[in-house]
Each structure stands twice: as C-alpha cells, then as structure tokens.
Amino acid sequence: MSAQSLPFPDRETVADKLATLGDADQAFLKLLFENPAQDESLLEGLHLYIDRAAAAPFLNSLKLERCGEWLGNTAPARLQIRLSEAAKSGQHPAYRAFRTGLERSGGLERAYPKSSV
Image (cartoon, rainbow, N blue to C red):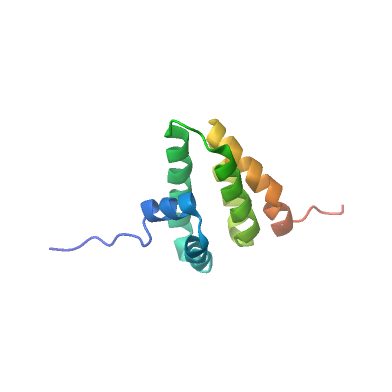
C-alpha cells in the first residue's frame, strides 16, 4: 500500500492562518515565504480563504483588506505578481477588498519599480 504524500501545509491550514492572522499565524506564513516550494500551497490557501469569505453570510471587507495589505508588505518579490493575479481572479466584492489592501501595500511596485524610460 503506497501512501500518497500530501503537500504541507495543505490549503485548509493556510486558509485558516490567513483568516486569523494572529502573531503565531504571521510567523507561520513568513516561514512559508522562505521556501519557494511552498508557493503553490500558499496560493491555494489564499484562494480558499477568499472563497470562504465570499460564501460567508457577512462580508468582512476590512479583514480582507488587512490581509491583502499584510501579504503585500510581507511576501517576497517573487510572489507579488501571483498575489496580484489571485486578487484579480474573481469579481466578488471579497476579491475586490483583498485587492484594495494588496494595492495599498505597494508590494508590487516595490518588487517591480516602474522604469524611468
């Protein structure tokens, strides 16, 4: 019997950490940022987090904005374009709120400054 290896962390764990975003959760996510092999799990968890927020009976847009701003300020440059793509992947107000926070952080502009030409 061969056991299929599951990615660690799974998307549910990442989504839960993004939902609470306490100090311990932030430290956990910062560890994920250090390993490019974890990028897929991080982004899958981000999508799950935003999808859960979109399905919730009450949309907490301030929490989504805060999460987007924290990710934009904290995530490494290699993730900034992918975070921006994730924020633009849905039309629901939950995605818009996340995108607002991400844009406010200026992470994409810091990672890829505009050319002077």
